[in-house]
Image 1 (spheres, helix red, strand yellow):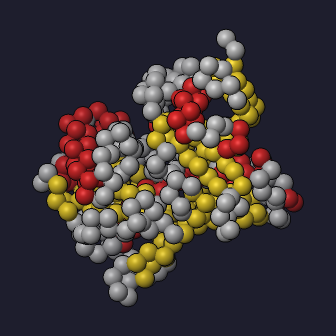
Image 2: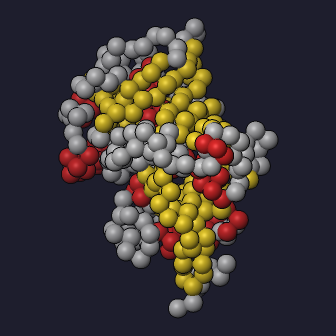
Image 3: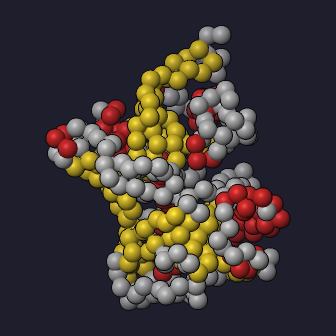
Length: 361
């Protein structure tokens, strides 16, 4: 079988991993691009046995980088969520965990030149238009992944990567509250539909008869809950102006409960057809914003911080994640920016091969 070779880097970004490509090495046509990514990841099989996916939604993510067309940014980051078992690619969302590896990958690819012990990489998320400043460790002008920073869901420690997200409100829908309401009732469940870095439908775990402290495996086994959640998500997508979202991973879904391990609030995040084993970076920003917003479904579940910036610690199945939120509450809640600390590590580099009948290169 004749095959096409495509250069790539393979990185863990946050608590996700996947290939990082130079956009110039891939087809421009979106439909052909989808077929290339399906072949590369092995989409369509639960183990992704004919590709480099890992059989889970957090390991079938793709980053594509290019010099930015935006005057502010250095790098354009184009994200693709490749389905595990269905041969589908969703180009609508972004991924903050994979974004954690964009700065190091851009330096490794030669798209950004190190500028000292810490290199600032300005990133534009093509899918949503969000702008992110990543501070990457480059001691002596050399990229390093070694460091003492630990994040939940990832063993060991790595060099810290500071991410500051700007312009995240209404990133997909154009509005902080896409339905115009702090709360909506769908199928007897109160939800807050919010768009901060990622559009989410957020509910209280107790309203589904859940504690909010279930493990990811326990939630995944509860198909009755998933069926009800999906019906609510589909209706919420319509109300949020997103149309038919039955084949889209957005809006995502989140659950809230009172904290029990010293955090600000307990959370569970869905991708949306299974439970995230930890927490998405983008989802964390939206859940933190909901926790800080009076009148949302978070009311009564936490002692709400009132001073900006506020550190919101979200409890999730594997531990916690901290979100530093700057906001203005003079005239209602208004979010300014959100920052997180993540890590990344380069795992491999080389060429990935796909059948030439899919793309000749």
